[in-house]
Structure formats: structure tokens, C-alpha cells
Length: 201
Length: 100
Image 1 (spheres, rainbow over the protein chains, first blue to last red):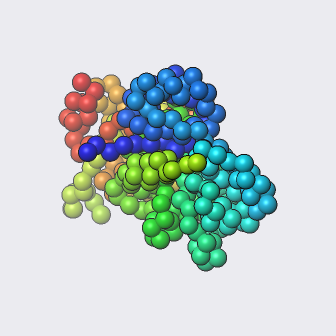
Image 2 (cartoon, one colour):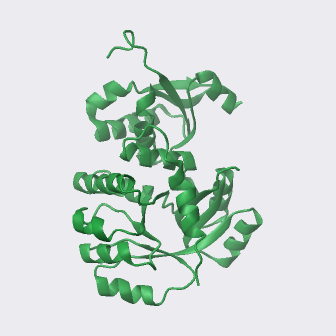
Image 3 (cartoon, each protein chain N blue to C red):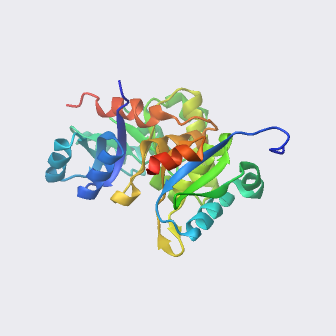
């Protein structure tokens, strides 16, 4: 059976994005600002679209307050503090933790509570490409995740159709950061598909 | 090690996007910022023209790193540019067939 590809993070969806996603062979997408009209258009072309909520909490209580009202959406957290990061990594209501340049450094305490999948968005990688410390931390998370068999999903984080990248290209991005030679295709297929197909009430 | 002493396998990466020569310069700059001059030399990164389209040649073990650099290019010749890979292949002929 052919692989199902999923882009787990798009900031918006329009006709150009739908055409690009279908053209690259994506079957699933997760969109932050989603209108019902485009969700229906995508569905007619064989692309299942799921709504996404992204939180940027700077404390544990702020994150818990945000998670309290969540229903039927994919929840991603971009933690702005170490405390929020540790809560996001272990709270079952969180689907993915978005890695970014300002994330707290990985250590044994973080490894102990790390249960949720992490998400590497290319848009975040572009933002922190000039920030050596941020890039080092991000690479450390990717390597630790692969080492400890924690699921990693790679997404484009695209805000427009031009920024949507083919699944193989996304898979190579993770391979480059983890020193692998072959593209990590599970990061754009099995892992995000499992996250998005999760039963939500 | 020299390619003439131990034959290293090359891979060719077909790129979708503007065919401007400045695109390759932008890509090489990003790659050099990430992996340095030694990386640039060891990767064997160079530009290849396949039926008028931009393709990159590099040694096999450097393919993910080159694709990472391709993904991080956001500007070329003062214009906003996003580069996408179409195909990675061991032969230029296969890339030419992809273009049709």
C-alpha cells in the first residue's frame, strides 16, 4: 500500500495551498486558520483537513488554562519557558510540541517526562538558522528524539502555497539534522498520520 | 579522499524554482553558513544544467545536508524564493526523463 503523507502544520489554507498539497501527494493536512469552505474543497479533492490550535504558553498555568477548553482539534504547543515545555511534553491533551530556536535546552529532567511527539516545522528552522544556540538546541532535540524513539513529525509551517514543500524534502530535513543518509519518511507519513487519526472527542 | 583514488557516488538533485544563476549562489551561501568551507569542498556541491532546469550534484552522503540547505533558502537576488526538490537520482538521464 502506498504511503499516506501528511503535513501537520499549515498556517492557512487557500486554493493554491490545496492544489500544491494534492500535487505533492499529501492526503492529510493540519491547518491553523481553517475556513469550512476550503476544508470542503480539499475534501472533494481527496485531502482530509484537520483544524489545528497552536498555543505559545510562557507558564504551566497558562498552558493548562488553554488546554481546558480544547475540543476536536489537533493541539500543538510552542513552549516559551522550560516549565511550559515540561508540562507540554507530558500532558496527554497535547498532540505535538513544536521545536523552535528559543526552546529550553534538553536535559535529563526533560527526558524523564518526555512522552508526546515533537514537531519540527521548516518555518521555525528558517527563523533560527542564523541563531547558533537555537539551532544547536533544536538539533539536540531531534537527535534525542530519534535516539529515544520518540515520534518526530516534520512539517512545512507554510503560510502560503509557495512555502509548501514536498514530503521527501521534509523527510531529508530531519535526516540532515540527525546525521542519517536516507530520508526519514515516517516523519511525514506514519507519525503525523497516527497523530491526526487519533480519536478526539 | 580524492574522487580519482576512491570512486565516490554522486547524486543529482533536481530543483523546482527560478533558474537564475543567483539562485545557486544563494543556495551555496546557505550551505556554507551551515557547513563551512570544508563542508562545501567535501560535499562536491556544484550546479548542473538539466534541460534548462537547475539541478545540483553532490556526493551521496551529503544529499540530506544539501536538501536542508535548499529548504532554508528564502531569498535569492533580493527576491523572496522558496526552492523545492523534485527528484534525487544517481543519473542525470533520469532527471532529464522526469522533466520530459
